[in-house]
Length: 95
Image (cartoon, rainbow, N blue to C red; front, side, top):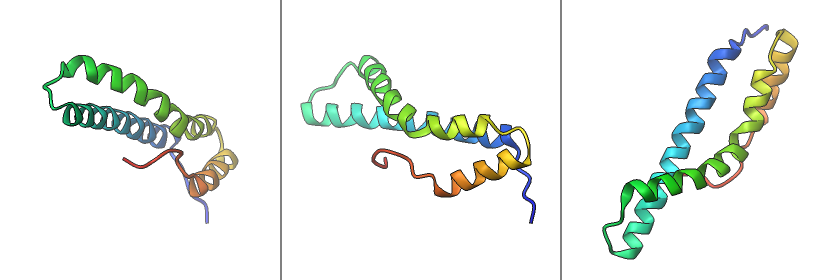
């Protein structure tokens, strides 16, 4: 069975997932900090700091997969990417 993989589409979905999870992790960190402090924090500033911190974690979690998907140029590399994707386990804790 031959599976056609549209590399650009899959890569964009993974990039969007990475970006979304990064933002969610940042928002969660700000919420947790605000809850723990009992104060109404300067949310925009804390959010920017939390997002920068989350970006490092998201890079470690998604960048290897994105590199593999970017290297798809023929059916053989698509097959290798599909095998990798089937075994891929994101690093880090779930959100």
